Image (cartoon, rainbow, N blue to C red; front, side, top):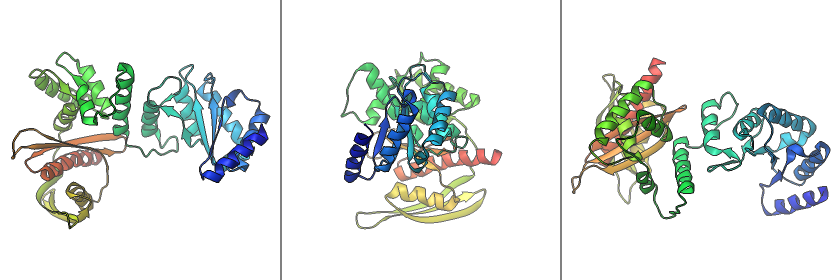
Length: 353
């Protein structure tokens, strides 16, 4: 078996540089054999070694001790990426995966729709909130991932298959009504990636009821706009003065934006990949701050050639999502207003802290 492992991994390594060796049921394997199997795989060229708790009966402390023991007994593990796969037999898969990361694991196997593995949604939330404590980093867009997971969960529960359905159409299929409680609305804002204070949650619910009382349903995209316009209204540190956008099919999009910061004019110019990108990059250049653009939404709120466009911009700073809303007949202007609205909320909160 050891020789078979060596030959198989070597054959795979001839085809690609990234080879993963998965040790199934590793937690119940004889330690000497497990060590020899891993050493054979690594010596043959494996770059990732995944150890599986297939039985899923370990407590987090026991799994952490297992990982420490393997690092000590198999020195070559320190030369490759250590992955873990934990079954959720006793509902400990998420906690065991986190303990493995704390002990040096660099890869987790998780599932969007969990049956017997760690939950991708839970693992992402934990890593986003406790990355520093775990000496880890997370590079995914948590809000976008949360939406995708929600859609997968909905499809799995309903049994419907909609391969051609767009994200916006799926968002419209998930909605709230006037009969939903404040707790239900708060839970929906969490699914959208927000972490609202009690005061903001009450403001959002009050605004939601005003709209829900007038229409049959409120979609999650509309709830996004409600949060952007109702939650955490703050003084404007940055105000838009003027903006000039030049773009075309033969020139790069350029944005020249002038803001007023606490009464002082500040301006910047940036060449970007499109008008919106150039405008947002120019604002970043002016403020000297970069925040992850978690989401950008655009929709018409009136009809006709002079229709008003509404934009919602969501920025991520640390572990929180801040949203802003802008309305204008010019979609670039609406986007700039929304970006500044979200930015002012971040600046205000950072100044308080």
